[in-house]
Amino acid sequence: MTKEADDSVLRLRLRTIIFGTDTRAGRYFDIALIICIVLSVALVLLQTIGHVQVEYGEQIMMLEWFFTVIFTIEYALRLYCSAARLQYMRSFYGVVDLLSILPSYLELIFPGAHMALLIRVLRLFRIFRVLKLIRYLSEGNMLLRAMKLSGRKIFVFFFSISLLVMVLSTIMYAVEGPENGFTSIPQSMYWTIVTITTVGYGDITPHTALGQAIAALTMLLGYSIIAIPSGIVTAEIHQQMVHRRDLRRCPNCLKTGHDPEAHYCNRCGGELPEDI
Image 1: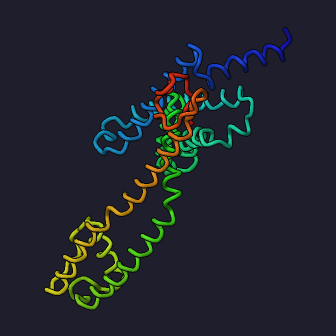
Image 2: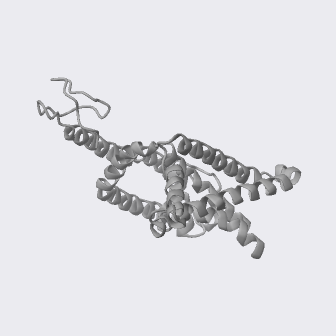
Image 3: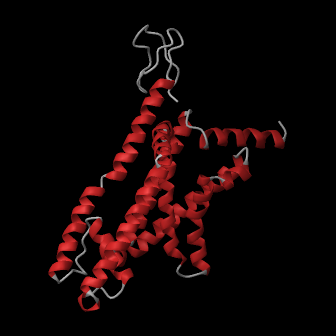
């Protein structure tokens, strides 16, 4: 075999192992990659704990460089064996792979770039592909469609709440005034948003009887309206689920309305097509 043929065979084998998960070697590679990803992310988390960084800073740094070298080799191998290198480099996972190793090298030139190592957390997204959780993306797509379809209703709701916040903020500014912490209408808007969302930090509080009455009304309004967006999205999700079941039509008896997990028709027993 020629050198070009040997190189082609090697790239094909590496492509099967690195990009595929159907072979034993590919599964072992994915398992090892998952372990490295989880451990590297754990190091990033541990590094933010003060006493851990003080006691084990050198060990953490050595392990970080170890994983950086591992990820660098992996990225280089992906570029080497990829059938579409430019497409991989521009893809989400390709960009995440590159960003997860660049900070370590940039820190050698630009001190402070080390904080960008937090981008490595994005590598956890690769677990979805490695573990073949991509099949569950249909559920996520259904949720996204429901949110998109309810977008106009949510916008109208948000606009109405914004007007309500503006009105209540202006009233509270006029009632309480700067002497009670409501130094401006934007400051009053902050208090109104915190109150109407039932967060209630307590850093700004009304002191007058009228202001406290308005605050009580604002809190009750918050409890009254906080469930509206959830109801809108829930209704759209229900519609999407009904539509999804209607799409699963039995090819034998043409019955619809099958559950997404069903494999056989509940009327004739025929095999159903794959869920969309």
